[in-house]
Amino acid sequence: MKYRKWTATTLVMLLAAMSILSACSGKGNTNGQTGSASPNGGTSETPKQEVIDIDWYVNLSWWKYSGDYGKDKFSQLIRDRFGLNINFITPAGDGSEQMSAMIATGAVPDLITVESWLDYKSSLVKGGYLISMNELIEKYAPDFKPYEDIFNWYKESDGNTYVLPNYAYSSHAMKPGEKLVPNSGFTLRTDIYEQLGRPDISTADKFLDALERVKNEVKSYDGKPIIPLQLYEFTANGNSSLDWLQEYFAIPYEKADGQFANRLYDEKYWDTIRFLNDAYRRGLISKDNFTDKRDQVNEKIASGRVFASLTAPQDFTDSMRTLFNNDEKAAYETFVLRNYEGDDPVLTDIRGFGWLVTMVGKDSKAHDRIIKLLQFLNSKEGQHLVHFGWEGETYTYNEDGTISWTEQYMDATTKQDGSDKQWGMGFNLLMDWYSVKDLFPKPEKLVDIYLSEENMKKPLVDYSYDTSARIGKVIPDHPDRDKMQEASNRISLYWGRELPRMIMADSEEKARSIFDETLKKLDEMGRQELDQYSNELFQNAKDALGIKHSWPLYNN
Image (cartoon, rainbow, N blue to C red):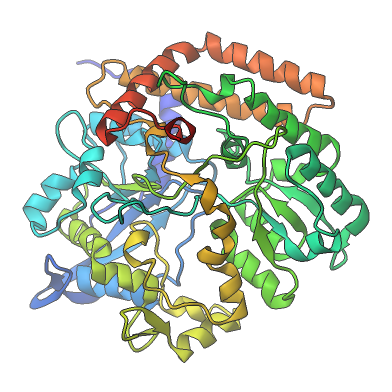
């Protein structure tokens, strides 16, 4: 008999997976009886079925279900129509430990949702832990027709697709020549900016000078000290504010000859670190920013303490709404941040192949119900429900096909006492935003006009471009795929560890020294080989899209 040799690390990962995912699929629940779900999301009259508990892991520590699960109408519909009761699981940190534990042990929940650019899906596929979407569709939902171009983009080497994305933009649905708003949108407090006389912030150094004026002249809001500059939360892999700052500083990801360019090694990238280090040394970034999680960032925006934010307004809409409802003068506007030379930014628009991707565990006991649920959430009916709720109750149709919110719904959202959670609207893990974005009513209330995407991001549209090829298209059977993914993870974690040290350095010279040392270390960790691999994926993406260049300025 052979005995498996367990390392301490493997054992810890196994215990972590078992504790997190101990409620995995297949446990019956006799609390409710329903009719079986038909492929189109309807409910047949026969036979009745007991409700099955399933686990849905979402790899975002800050993600929360939008309603009051188990009590709201959306979760009751899932139970009654599909015979499912969902237990949502989120990680305490960035999720890397949980995902590594799943890959190492095979303790995979019924549904897993992760960021699309992380290649965990391939490791799960290789381990045999997932069931393909095309197999589920063929077997249980043959009339489910996902967007073909999006579906094919995610094919693995075995010819199967194992994921369904959210917020993906199909070429079959896009209007010819359509220009979309960018994903990011740096914001600042209009009232405070007006108080300063709307100073020139056309370059990075002028913007920092304006922030210093906020610190020294405005000082506080509602008795609390102002935070001149707020970033996203820091994670093990870095900070999303820096990811977008490189777009505002117009740092290219492609060379003139069409080859992939690692932005970290562009001399202009140092300017992003210099900018943040300068801001920190001048007391414009709070020390708390380096330890705060998303909830704390939300609280600070809602309290009115944040002047400028290098984030995205859609991520903090609720906080901005809370602040505005308490003080109508305390509104945010987007602004165009430029590099030290004053170059126009090159922003990534919201088109693409998805923000999150959702997968189904192979060992789930509810495959038939899960794929019908996913089909429903991808359908016109499902999209209308998660965005608009119930016709006649939360909305009514206008003659032009758009909707109007009911008085009942508007009253509930205005109260801010949680009564709007009774419907469970806003479930975003399978959202197809493009299919419904033009159906919303034109905002009438001042707060809705202010927070509308059309208003908030309008100044940024001229700088927004389709950069879909930037992240590359996976080559499923590439012989170095696993090796390169491991290298990417190691490099990303090392960068995430060193980034706060660069920003918090007590001098520009010290920040530059840490930056240079970090790049040298990344080279030692295999960065150049990883760049060559990234270039192959980049060229594969451009070929799939039929373009010669992806960097927008090379196409002008």
